[in-house]
Length: 533
Ligand SMILES: *Cc1c(COP(=O)(O)O)cnc(C)c1O
Image (tube, rainbow, N blue to C red; front, side, top):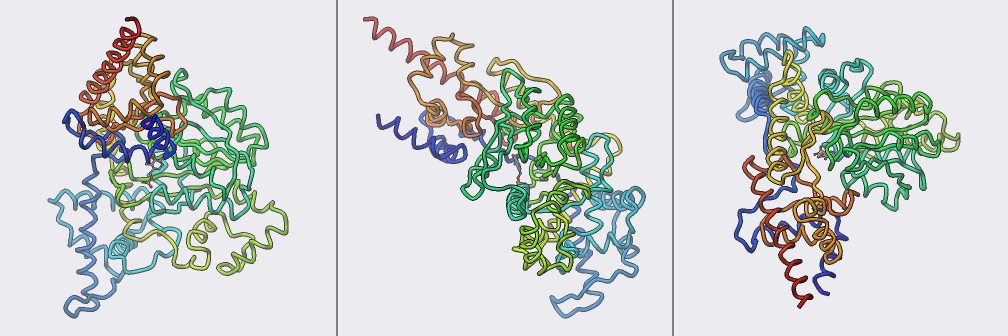
């Protein structure tokens, strides 16, 4: 049938492709419902405190620049001497943005041991954007601040800030591209290598290993609904197999929104102690949404490269800010040192354009150089205003004494929306501490069975394609949800984002899902009656 063919073609587009189709259908939905897009992972909140601090440095910086040159709209350069004192005179502590700036300058001086003048100068120039990023990988004080932030939010009490190096990137997205590119260039992953990956997972991660360029073999570590969407402990045994070169994961996961529990972390730590050659890449963008979160990087710093992004927590997707963090002692450098001499010589040749000692050129610098095709290493690095914005978001957390009210609010928002959705659908909530609740997975067949019996679930599976429910939900009821299959989730799984819609949308989504299930049930009843007569 035509419609079936249409649905089959759509399925081929993957989760994000289908979502863009259902978007159009939902906007002109048959029931004239309000349009509700629960597919977007983009949050609908922003952090205001860090943003308000940003323009203060522009205003101050322009005044500073006019001290050295002034002709109409032309100003000059800034100077270090006495800059901290002039900045103190500039601040108006009755204004909350200036009080925040004062608090973080004090914090940076007292806790991070950063020279006040140097920091004011670094921030002012970074935000004016009048200099190339120097050093190109990361501005020096900003690196200390990002390190302190990652330690405070993701390491769960483990001290690694001093031994960690940061490469700020254009969001987590660029981090991922740079990592794959440099792993391949440096011969750390090769055609046909076996890579373990935790599914269901953020689709770009599924798509990258399947690029013909890499031709890697994926070994699934499937989290399942009947195991609270956690990787089963025994499944981790596969990482002991030396033919597995690397383990890529999103933690807490997307779409399932579950963090690894302490038992799994302990097991990974054990495996890494034995497997000094195992590469782990962990994407911890959702870490702060989990109470007491701990990253794999904290338990296996030697083996692990950490990707973080400010996009979700701070409502900063348009800023494109994220980073790669890795330890000074790491498996990547040691694996490079053990490459065959022939490969090393070819790498020497490439990197000798930018370093006199290519053999000791660390992987994190290779990542930076590779991001600009090596040749343009000296003008690589994330734009300085972006680096400063990352530091400001980081400081908004670091200045909090015990509890960060902003982070608590973001957790409360998604938890409340999760609660209204699940209550509306009549599904049991999962309130384990590993549940980030940023997204939720709903199995439409299980819900059909719960509401109308096994008969309806079977009827839907036998008579309609994978995405039929999703298309109808958009076309008839105006709701866009993403299908989970594109993330390698089991059939019938839908991903709802708790990040992007106003709170009152979630009970509506529940009602519209239930109304559509009733329609399927009515159709089934009618067809059964029809065949009876
Ligand atoms: C949203 C998201 C990111 C963030 O990417 P940015 O490029 O920083 O916006 C990274 N990883 C995962 C798994 C995500 O869901």
